[in-house]
Image (tube, rainbow, N blue to C red; front, top):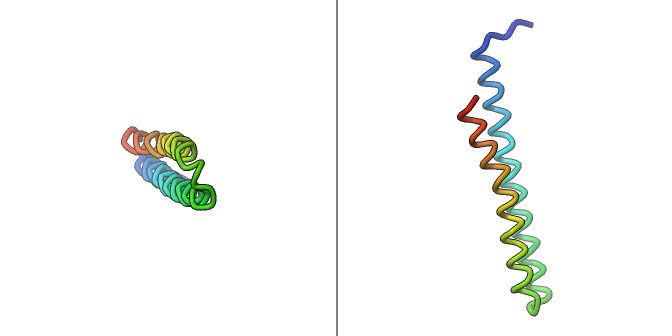
Length: 73
């Protein structure tokens, strides 16, 4: 199988885009579960919200790395 440079570049961009979708799905799941936990135990809402924001920031960093890789490739 003989791939030229442009084909390999486009495959790499597609893989970077796929990882951005995975990050978005993970963030949605994380926020949904945090809101569910806040609904079950409202007294812990402040603590859960802070930890949720940190988790979302970490998940978002993966998408940002993929976004940067998309433009570097």
